[in-house]
Image (cartoon, rainbow, N blue to C red; front, top):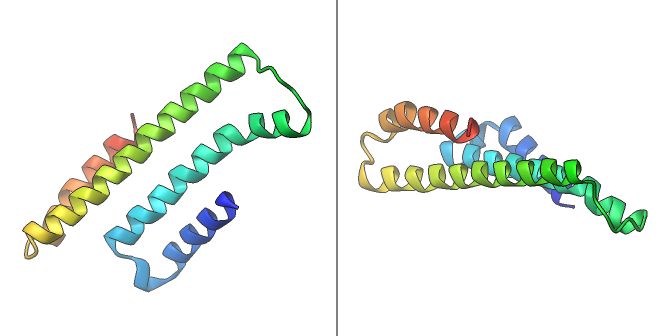
Length: 114
């Protein structure tokens, strides 16, 4: 259900012209990181539930821990971008577009390349 709804939100954000505003783009990025988080833990969960496997290989455990921690950091970066977006919109409404264009692109690249 989580994957379906997140894909639907991303599709709606990118297909509708009304939603091409920074806050909706950030929500789509948040949905994307949620999809990545779900897909990093889903294979192990399905193995436990369907195949009744109670153990996980050490390398698979390390890979899953890496991806979970990486995607959690990316999600925190997107939440920070959303907070910065609201701060700039409230405190500097006349320079909102200029600040967002210059700062958010740089911060977004940093949060996605941790």
